[in-house]
Length: 214
Ligand code: O7E
Image 1 (cartoon, rainbow, N blue to C red):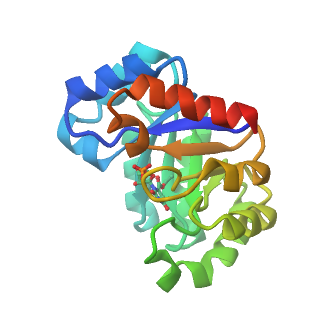
Image 2 (image 1 turned 30 degrees about the horizontal axis):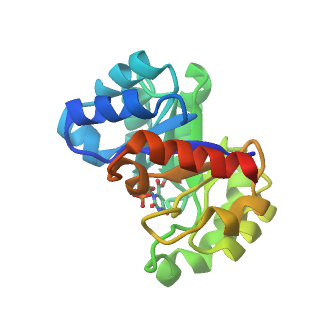
Image 3 (image 1 turned 45 degrees about the vertical axis):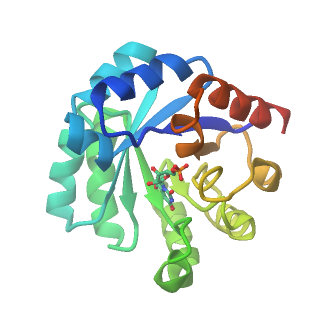
């Protein structure tokens, strides 16, 4: 059964912590990105971890030269359990982050093909190559889309690595369309369908149960 990762893209610290408190029994990991960190500061990661004792991943989709990637990774991984990087910038840029992560025993997760419609324009044509690179570099996991289950399957088969898959819920992806592709090392990311729900706790419970049934 795949795990559930909450994408906590709210803009207010107190709201974020309230949602974490509500859903902590049903989510396995929490992903924070620019919306929350630029609003509340990177220390929000520490606060979330203290509150729920779950893995917290920083989704900064790091995509710079190796020297700059290294700096970003050092600051981020002081707090977070893992960091998300782009692969299209090339092996050296990803390796720079991996070197930092290895020293700190943290995770590096690499994007292959994104979940939004525009990803077919430039990312899809190179996504298989990115999956091969992820395999070669032995990153800890890759990102591939729930909105295109056939691509999720193909990319997972190429990389043979754990997958973190966004697109379920607000972007139209459905648990039943991806559940058979995934295993217990994979994560399904759900954001708005939980945190914008009238009852985030019930929504998280519902997704957790759907993943368990699969
Ligand atoms: O659509 P939602 O609200 O369920 O949120 C999805 C989250 O996953 C959101 O934080 C978005 O930035 C992220 N995401 C995608 O939606 N598509 C992608 O291709 C990649 C990501 C992402 O998180 O990348 C790293 C895992």
